[in-house]
Image: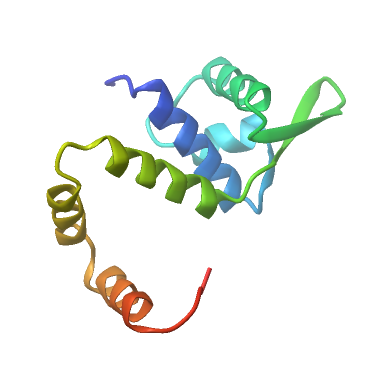
Length: 120
């Protein structure tokens, strides 16, 4: 099994937490993540996310129950903006990104770009 960059695993844990309705225990998240990460690894990631203020936690017996403390879509959009801001050629990055979209994702993007107002 290849190791994921820490930032990627943090993003995957946040996405899994969002997929579970924004609230879960470590064991539930381990079951949702690809690559069979160790319980202790996921627990460490959750601890770091808590320190960063991205998740909150409450004691549930011997374990913690974690909740998203941020809007996942806002967090991911912010990461995308940061990547574009640091790219030497953001237009090429956007072009490559758009070419990876599924036809349904591309349709949604077209609708957002052509339509008025904020949809999310």
